[in-house]
Amino acid sequence: MTSKGEQCLAQALEESQLPGWDLVREHKFHPTRAWRFDFAWPSQRLAVEVDGRRHRTCAGQRSDCEKLNEAVRLGWRVLRFPSDQWRQAPAWAALVLECLCCPPS
Image (cartoon, rainbow, N blue to C red; front, side):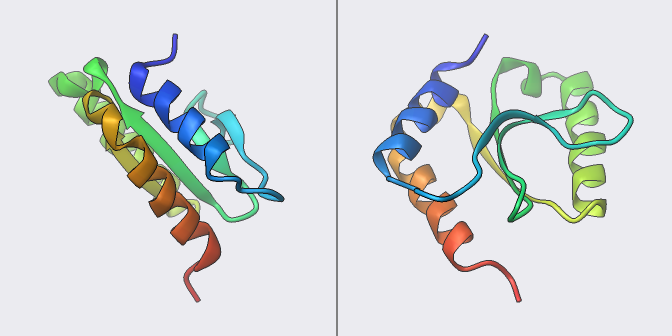
């Protein structure tokens, strides 16, 4: 089930008109683990995680640390946004666009 934050970001990304980018929802990024990103642009190795309630528990935070550290080890850049701040989705989409258009050198 997608959170309000994910729904709002999906809409904001659609409205931002990011043509030509390879957006994948629920992208499985790890070769052996079942880890997935909420949003990913594999060609740019850019991912977005929208943190919901599970991320607030100690176990959820530990799991996220392991997942995101492994993502960085594999060359991914990961943006994280708190789902309860869903009204900020247009600003999140703008940051995504900035990261897509200005990848690190």
